[in-house]
Length: 489
Image (cartoon, rainbow, N blue to C red; front, top):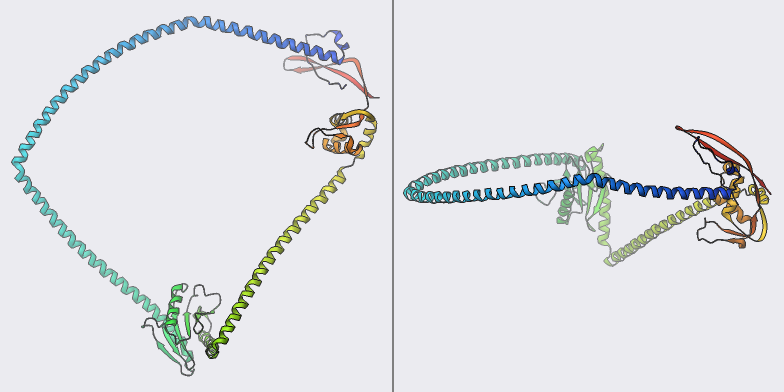
């Protein structure tokens, strides 16, 4: 049987009987329990008596006040009834007066209506004349307003015309500057056979210039923009080139800016069909020698023109076969690229799986290492031999073993930070698995061990009682401490 030590304080002026030191722990427990139950019953009885007395006292003290309040309520009811009757009479009198006033006002209104009728009949001609005068004035104002609006419209139209003329003049001036600059650059072809530059900017659908050479012709369109050349200008030169089927090349030349969507390199090519190609030239004026750039583009077009001539001489059947072969090759390349993307995706997935496996293995190794380092069960062996003995008919609870170990090895538990889970693991290493009985599904709950029992301990209780005085506010209390010597059998 384990012993529990408790502290009890009593007033300083009270004294304890000497017999209390002879009581056994069980007798001390019964003495405290009986005393507590008696005090609880006494408090309940005192509380019930005091509540009844308080209720009776309050009832007696408030009886006169309640009677006064009831009397006041009756008086107020009578006064309210009288006031209500008086207000009702006043309301009836005021209502009667209002009816009389309404009748007088109704008669006065009838008389006024008769006077208005007489006035209208007598003065209708005068009223009509005044109305006609006002109408004439309004007509004059409306005519003046119309004239003013007409003048305003004419002024706005003139202003719009002048703005349009100014804008056209500005645009044409900017265009003429760009055309003049490109014309200067095109003079580099003066030594080419059959070269001739024809100005077409006044003819719609022909571009700005036609560059005629002995081998082929070029449709050129020069742009002198401050921003990127927009997409509508690209569509425009496509239409112009398609309209001129005999011209195989179209040059869209941006003098000072780049061409939208076609500015990844200074010079880019776009085939619009098998015989016509558009050349996009970006920022021509920014080059150190723009004329040299135009000559390079011309030589490139000359080589491309040879391909066009060769295509015209090739048999249609052979050309169709080559195109089919090209399409098949394109499909194969497309499938290969798709397979490569899928393969790269799978490779990335496998890499992630391998990384996760490495992380899990590392965690397992770290956990096992920690368990090996922290599972130094030799610390428990001496205590087990001193406190546990084999008994086939006994059953001990793991919680009881832990309580005994915690009581004996307080310093060791604190120093090694031993928890109850680790102590349970130690128990499982000392007994076979068949001896463990787990009654709960929770892995952390207590379990029973068959075939062992705790060794008995003998308790010696000294008859000495040490009294320790503790000052608590104004009341001095005595603290009784029982000394016990614990020996292991």
